[in-house]
Image 1 (cartoon, protein in one colour):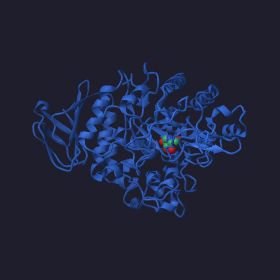
Image 2 (cartoon, helix red, strand yellow):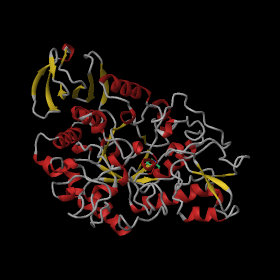
Image 3 (spheres, protein in one colour):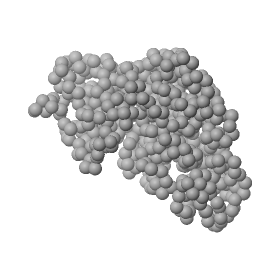
Length: 531
Ligand code: NOJ
């Protein structure tokens, strides 16, 4: 195991700081709250936490609009609280990854305030400015991912600035070396404090076309489809020049001892995604693989169509990874339905490659209905259908008022799920058959069995429709994972595999010997079988 880095053998847990634990009872989660709950994460068995942004921010996009890259947002605490959290994370045998948001800053960042002050201000070129089109309109057809044009007119200097997200998130000009240096300095600041790496926000959109050409429109787009799918980002994403910047970032991170990790947020098809490992594996250690998040539907056949081609197209030596949920997409339990969530979790935690778990998914949390008048999220304010608030609601710790997230009587920033009294950590910890107990058992097995953490992956194709199966092998260990992704009982006929015994079943109540020549697999049930 020694030749593997922690981020290869470990499991990452994403914390959305506003919603994990409110340590000072103001209705919003914070760093001291996270510190209080580290024992739980250790009990659960995850290896690293990734914190969504904790930097000073006017919260136009809840932290993804940063006004100072080297400090802590007062709502979350201060640098002392951060140092204590980091020290405690390490004491608990875990690692800590920060979110880094280099593509855009807040419009309240002093850099942008300066840039706006005049056309010849030295910081002007730190952002992306264009003259109006001859008719006075926007410079080109680029659209914001949050809806509408990506250009905002600045009255005072009479030019437009670019924002690929909210207008309060102006895009930085990564073609300017001063921007690179300032951002790299900010990364060094946190690496020197001891963080174990970064998840880099929209890394594939950091550079835009130098000629500002119009993006082609997607011919099949219809109202109700997402904003970002309205046009094809030929000129606003995945530009060749971005790779050189990522290589510089990687060199910076690698210069620090202790296996610091660089993970890129990238929504691209798998063929393009894998190019972000870099020609010499010198770009991100892992480009987030969102295939299970973006998959429209859920079936064994769809899962196979993600896993097998991805395995085949990974560059030699590149380490895979899988994600089931995050703060931008509906919760997995809501997307695929409760019947299949045990299967989804067994899949995530047995595939080859680093799993990332989204807080609360280990409880089976679902999207929470947030009344329109309570919507916080900027794209949700434009169109409630696109609100990401429902997947960001407070963690459900126990059955007390406010689910143990904030004290009783505190108004939490988003509503708590109605079913929190039955669905919470305390209740599920006591139930050996709960979903949480399954997640913990899977995590523990993944740690104990090298076949799961570092073993090879081989597809098993001679299984009935509705079943997804594969082998994981390392040295003497040989495991078969069979997942019934359907609502019907299936019979598997795999005589070549002989006999085995069930190490873990999704229902948690089946064990013992099985004959692979005739294996009954109940509906929505999965087994990890040792051969
Ligand atoms: C991706 C983040 O995950 C999302 O939450 C955010 O709104 C955009 N980047 C803009 O930073």
